Every structure is written in structure tokens, then in C-alpha cells.
Length: 323
Image (cartoon, rainbow, N blue to C red):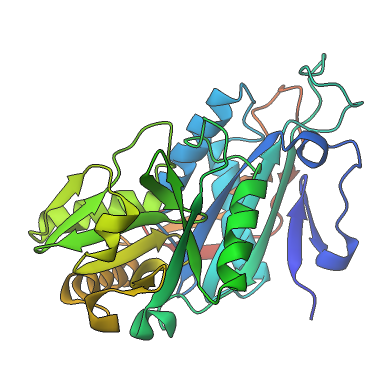
């Protein structure tokens, strides 16, 4: 059965979804995206993703495609229409469609907003039991990695190199130091302390990373923010990665060097358990959102990019306070 996807204010079967061949996301990678996890039909750590989206849009001088409330409602409706119990929602905003020119088009076209769901095993991921292998590869990306853009060709090449070598992920290396994974943040553990690169324009501020820092602080796990080399990683007691679609994932081999005897270690197991418990708890007391009180998508009234659609009926969802 075809999924329902979202394209510019419409919910459509995936086979009927279309965007313009002149869309700047397609022609220039002139767009940003976010991936939010869903567990038990509820969004996990969603506010952090919206904060990062706001920053990415600001850095690229792009308008919001709709209000925050409308974006919230769209995510909830995508969960409902696709009966998504566990997996992710991918959403993407581009500068819209215009005749091809490098400068920003004037007048500004309507933003393009799309979203789709993917079913995934996030909680009972078998890789979390065995751990995964990673390789290192040169970091070929641009200098503004802090912006979550759709310009992902360098990570695609790195990820494919990892798959070609029988690994799960590639850690990118610049000036002899590990920056991050192609689709994850990178960590090692030494003497019970977690080490990960500090936040700069050189890496993405991961939302799972942010949640992990808070949980680690609450449960007495020390995190040190500094760079580390591949050679130091080879000698680490443990290693792991984090991302919205993998949560906390143990690493048992780096460039052929076994880590922690080839088994997930106690620190990463503890951190994953803490994150899963938090994801399952979903922030505490639930609140109700009535779909008929929100437009499902679109910017504020009178905005030139208006693509709003009123919600029909009186659909009701229970969502966590993390939304």
C-alpha cells in the first residue's frame, strides 16, 4: 500500500507526488531538512529539531514555509495517515521553484515543503546488540556543516565507501582529527569518560547529541568536548555514534581495529538504555491537540508564500509534551 506523503499543502499517495524541475533544492541543493524519530506513534525530541530547522533557515536567509503550529500539525497528520508506530518523518524545505540562476530569485517564490515517513526498527535495532563497524575517510564537505542542508554528496560518497568495505558508517577526518560520521555524531570512551568534538561550524549540532548530553549529566557520565584522532579512537575502550534514526549505536571496529574486545561496552549500553527510557517516556504528561484548530500547513495569514490547508473534521491525537 502506497504511503501518504506531503507536498506543498497536499496529502497525496507517494506515486502522485510531484515537484517542479525548476525547484532550487533539485538544481542547487538550496534547501534544508530535518528527520524526527517516532516511537509508539509519538514524536521523539521534536522541539530540538524545530529549533535547528529555525537556525538552518535563518543561516540560509530562507523564510519559514508555515507557522510552527502548522508544521506540528502536519507531522501529527503524517503519523496518523500512515499509521506510523515506529520510524521517522523526513521533512524538507527549499527556496522554491524559479528559473535557474545562482542568485536568490526576486520576487521570492513560494517555498517548497515536502515530508514522508519511513518505518524503521529504532528501539529493537539488532545493530545495537552486536555493534557496528566504521571506517575513516577524508572530510570533503563545505565549511558550514552546522547548517542541515540537503547538500549531501560528500556524505553519500563516504557512506558508500563504508558499505563497499563492509562497514556501517564512515567517520570523516580533517586535519588529522575526526569531525563526525556521514550521518551521525562520533564519540569514543576512555576511562569511563565520553569524548566528542565540540560544537563549531565544522560539525552538525545533533539533536540526539544534545539529548544525550543532558541524560549523561543527570546520570553522572562525564562528557569531554575535544577533538580526537583516528589513532586515539583505535585505542579507545569504547566508541559509539548518535543520530535521530539510530539513537545511541555501539561501534566495535574502526578501520579494522577492534574496540572493546569487539563487544558493546558498559558506558554505551548505559547511555542507550537511558535514551530509550527517555524516548519511551516521551517527556511526561500528554496533552491534546485538535486538528480542527490548526491549519495543516502554510505561513502566517497574508504571507506571500501562503500554501495553507484547513484541517478537516475533529481528529484528535494524544501527543507528548516533547512535541
